Length: 123
Image 1: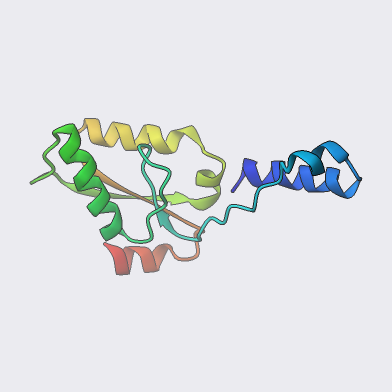
Image 2: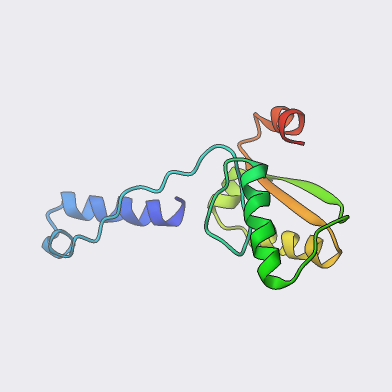
């Protein structure tokens, strides 16, 4: 979503104003839907629906990189969804810092309302 969706909105407005270049080049993409809750990592564009899906991916990624996660502490990171959509730099910096400290971060973005359910149900 975010920036891509805003760009597409501008293109649609241009198309509505009869801009032939926009119509001819078919520059408008479908909107990107971002869920209200998701698990993310800087090494992939995938938004995982559950921590299990995230851990399955993380184990494969770490196996390729030669990283052993056994015995490492797992730490949940709750993030605001709007910060993820805006691609705030601190999110991926925070994940890197945690990894460098020997932690396994589980970065989950939320809208804010479901914070209590995420903690209750996923951790």
